[in-house]
Image 1 (cartoon, rainbow, N blue to C red):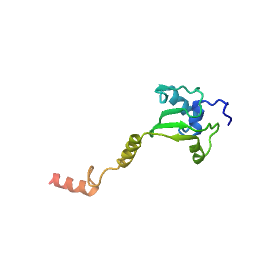
Image 2 (image 1 turned 60 degrees about the vertical axis):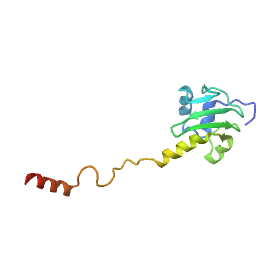
Image 3 (image 1 turned 90 degrees about the vertical axis):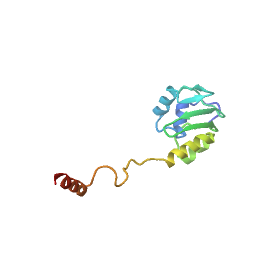
Image 4 (image 1 turned 30 degrees about the horizontal axis):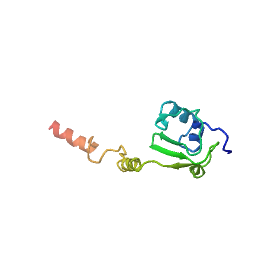
Length: 128
C-alpha cells in the first residue's frame, strides 16, 4: 500500500485481527475503547505509520505501534508484521495471572448435592 493512501482506523484494527469484525472495531472506537495520545480515536481517523494506539478488547489492553498499512484482512502470521505490540509488562503479567486462576465452573467432588445412594441413606435415617 502506498504511503499517501488513506486508511480508516476501524479498517486497520480489523485487518490486523484485533477485532473479529469491522463493525466491532468501529463500535470500540465510538465507545472510547481505542485511544490515541490519551484521547478517544474515532473510527474514521486516518492511520499513519508510527502512530501509537491503546486498544481495549475483551481479552486484554493492547498498546500497538503501526509499522505498516494493511488494507485487507490477511492471515494472522502476516498481519502481525504490520504492527508492533508495545503492551506494558504489568498488563502481560495481569493476563498471565488471570489465565492461571481460571475457574472451570465444575463443582468440586464430594461437595454439594448428595448422590442417589446418599439421599436414600439420609431418607432411611430420617424415617427411622
